[in-house]
Image (tube, rainbow, N blue to C red):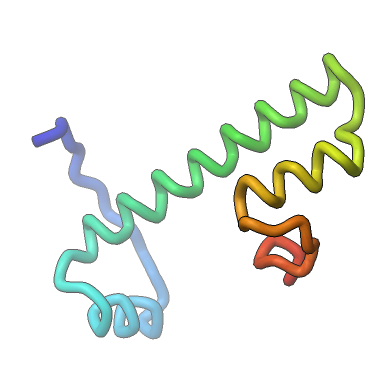
Length: 82
């Protein structure tokens, strides 16, 4: 088992109720959510650093990335729903 530290996190009652509906392991669920967010932020930092060193991504590079991630060059994937 990985080393852990016990902390207290305060969440709105509605979020806690929803969490308990979908998992018996709230700590594990929250740990995975934090890990996913950390990966997201690290990836964003890496992408910004790459662009600073090599310039903006081209439309072709973005299309290739979409194919790698979503299996299609269509920009209507989940990332564009925002």
